[in-house]
Image (cartoon, rainbow, N blue to C red):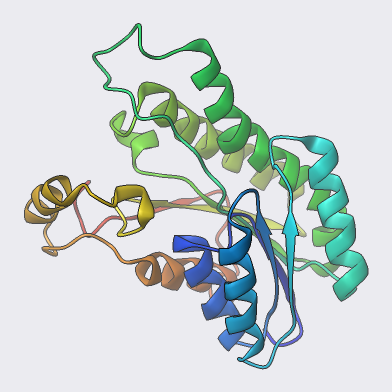
Length: 244
């Protein structure tokens, strides 16, 4: 893994940060994408560099193709290669599923713009470099895409679409590039801050008796990158057994 380069979208916080730090410990140079959390991205890069590898932080809205292409060009110029792409950036609008009128048109556009189009744009922009390096892609989806539950109907639909895109790209980019997805259940990040009762209820209904930490997701991402050379087009659920 040493001297490889990974681009992690939404890499400054939560799951993305945990993935970045784990890969950095294994000698991978890290490019952190962010859209709003610049301070978090900078702090994460500082932590990465303490581990003895190089880092870069770059602001880009992944729902905008031109910004994504410029970001990939910058990463390749800076590091000379792109070996790993982790599509972790995601967004939602919290709307009760029963509130059909509350699921506004613009919410659908926002959610699909980042969670589906953004993921595709990043894969498309990085495809040529990933083929050169025989690299891999990991898409962070969600069990919401498998259960139809989650923060909103549009969010669940976007994660189901992301699973489908993962399968399509696994075929298109093979044999040089492997494309897989990791579908977390509830994860202890700022997305669920203030929702203690919700977290406690979910943890109680999970066989392993707790919700995930970002590091739990990072471990599975790392395994797919470093140790699963004959796995592609798959979605690995990481939810403590809640969705069996």
